Each structure stands twice: as C-alpha cells, then as structure tokens.
Image (tube, rainbow, N blue to C red; front, top):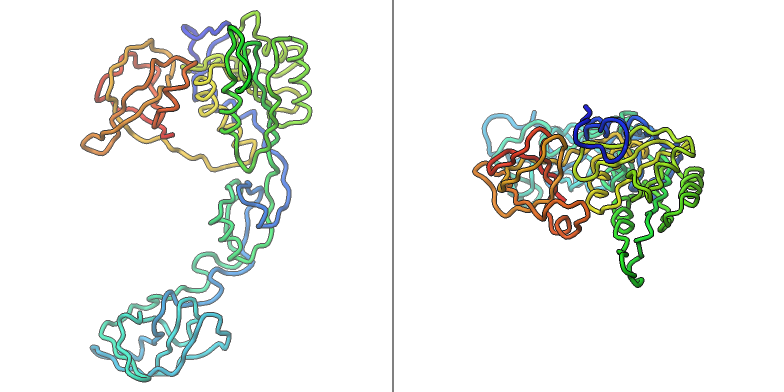
Length: 414
C-alpha cells in the first residue's frame, strides 16, 4: 500500500508501505549458490539441501538413567517385587544380551537395554541387598528407555533446507552419522558510506564534519557466519567516484549497501549513479519514520540497498527491510518473529500516514504482564543516544496520530 501524501523525500512516485517494501525487497533477492562443508566447518552456515540420517538416533534402545531393566510380564500381582540381578550392562557394552525370565539387569545411563526388558526402574526407587533388588512401584511400559530411532529414524529427515546450523543442530547431525552438509556459500557484501562531512573515529574533525558511526553499526549488524563483509570506507561526494565504486562493488559482490546520499539533493549522488549504471530500481521511498528515502534495486547481478545517512534511520530501515532480504540471499527460510505485545506508557501526537519506530524502555508491566513502554528521545533520525539506551523498538501504526497511555503496541527487544 502506498502513501502519496506525506512521503515525497524528493523522489518521484508513491511511497510503499513498510510491509510492501519488505516483500518487494525479499522478492528481488536471490539465494547464493551452494558448497559442501564438513560438519566441523559448518557452524553458522545455512543448509542448501535437507539432511537425512545415515543412522537412527538413538541407534539402539538404551537406558535413560542408572537403574535396573525388568520385564513387566514378570511383575504379577501387587508389589513389592523381589527380583534377582543377573546382568550388569555399562555404556558401550556390545554383547547383545537377553534378559532371562524373572530376572533383572543393572544398567547404566546410555547402556543398551537387554532384549526382553521393557522398562527401567530408577536405582533411587530400588533397595538392593546382595544380588537381589526390591521395589514397590510398578513401572510403565517403556519407562526410562530411549527407543531406537525415537528422535530420527534411519533415512529420516534430520534438518530441513534453509535452517542455520547452530551448535545443537550440528550435534544432531553428528548423532545421525552425518559427516558433511550442502550449505549456501557465504554472502559477499560490500558496504560504504558517502559524504564529505564524514571522518573515521580517531581523526580530527574540521568544522561541519562528524564521525562515521554508520560504518561500525552496519558492520556489527552484518556480523554473521554466513556473510563476508567488505568495508569500502568513505566515498567523497564525487559523482564519478560514487558511480565507479558502485559498479566495481557490484561486479564482485552479491550485495552492495551504502549509507547516505540517497535523497534528491544536489550532493546526493547515489540515485544518479544507479541510473547511469542502468540499475533496476524497485524501491525509492517507504512510508516509514525514520528512513523514508530508502533505495532498493539491482545493479548488474548484485542486490543494492541505499540506506539513509542518519544513524537511527539507517538502523531502522536495515532491521525492517534490508535484513529480511539478506536472509533470503543467504538461503534462510526461518523467519524469526521477535515482536512481543506491550502497552504504551506515554502520550505522543504525530502526523499519521507512516509507520513509525521509536526507541523505548520499560521498568513496569501491566496486570497481564505486558511491558509498559516509555519513549526515549525526540525521534530525530540522527539521534544515537536514545537507541543506545533503549531496551527495544516500538512500532506505531501508520493510521494512528495520537498515542495514548494504555494503548496496545508491539515492541521488538534489542
């Protein structure tokens, strides 16, 4: 849905809603190719194909704890039951033992359960005297036994395509006998900042200059094992240099991300450079506050994101639109939803028409446990201090001009 009334941002055409812009950015993203890696090298990478078990998990019936394996058929009548112990089975025992009728086997955690046994009685529930045990509680069938293949059957699907390989997921694959996996190669991302006013931290500021905070922020936001980020530094306000940098970055990277220079002022050269390079421009502005002059398109074979130069605007447009598209390029199919219900604890009058994201904190909850949000800062897109102090980012619906205490809102914890 577009908003034509309030979001000109110096660019022609209507502004897309946040949801429409996000979907369009995802639609133009293309997953990168795949490669094969050993499990030991695959942490944090994204599966490019489903993985099937080479072995069932567990590979055999085993005891879930230390205790005694028994056959329920031997436990007639009411307890207590007095049973002789004839076997001792530890983890790693490979004898393939069978439990004789009327007998019990001492088993340890992870040990194979002998044939003929269908329950394990915890050792805490047993009194042992010599080679006999006595217990009073009848176990249930299968109690304290981990059955062969109960996690994953042999040749069963252990993990689906598009998931990130976390340490627990790698452990699962190892337990299924898997040695290597097909993953998407790392996404090659180039990023740069634009503007004569920028100086890297540690340098001397001349009048009218500021330190380049976006470089640090965006680099940290893209610090993922599935991404290789090339930092191209600061590009000065030179149209030919900006165009050449975009062209060169697009030739050797999957994604190019710039910050600054995406409005329509005389010193904003990104849009002219993209057009000169015959870029396909899918998004020119979004009905979002802050961050409306966002540019998304393709340059050659690379996906391009032109973010606003103001730090808070860059952070919001990255989280709401760029990050979902980057996840698509990486091959991720999981779509984490970390928004939680909250309630406003502040009053705020604003212009309707754009979805607004505001930094918030909270120290109280209402009667049903929702955080009661307090707004930080004045909402300026260049402000760094409020978002640095925030516990989360609250979203204000575009159709509501007056935010009142007690109004339901959503918040994304930081």
